[in-house]
Length: 329
Image (cartoon, rainbow, N blue to C red):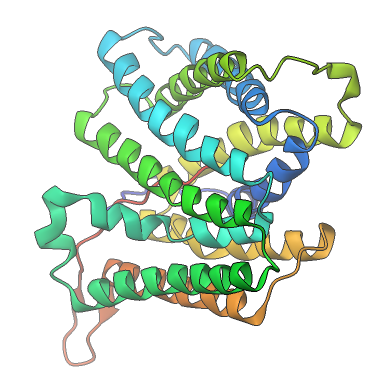
């Protein structure tokens, strides 16, 4: 994908935007776990996405966007339900039992699922040997994590709820990538900020309904929520959903998609560091090795995005680009 850059952006703004995408999106796993220890999972998702969605809709209205276009709203609704309600909703639920660092490592294989589920482009995406090697290696990294968890489960050191959580976690990237592909296929003539705003609003409404039917409100009182949980929720709304996404969209307008997509390598590392340092989570050597394997697989998958200067010719060999995906959690 070719990106045309018209005006040279401020270096300081670029650094701040990259730091925001790298650090904030990597830290969302840590803050989700902090929030779900104060709020019921579905209610937390409702408060986060509905609030952020309404704020972004107001911003879009202020920018002069046409808020209601039926086709765009329907597309955003379906993709929002898949990506945010199911994809992120699963993450919120499993973080009640799984360490945030393990969740981040599992979700880091997201781009690999994107290639596997993008059936119309199999001939293009899977014709490259390094891409195929990356896909196989990525799933191998996920299997490493499952293998260790199952081994510990048999020995009694890991509860079966954690195994169930890891299995359920497989649904998250499948739903997220399905929503991304659906949105890409249907297309939209509206700005990305407006599409995302509707995704958040619709997902927030779905979380509200789910919270009601799961009776999370029974016995729950907002006064009982700790200050840490409130701060975590505020962080997820302001920085996780609004700030980081805005930085991501702006970076795509001033930098190539290949450079912006490097957040996929940094986010899980940030998540693991935060989990270990601040939440006292234990990461085994095999789990760290699994993370390295998955990150290496992403490098192989994305290798054809980069350009290489041939020493014998004064030209650049351009490889077919694969669209970067927004992995906001």
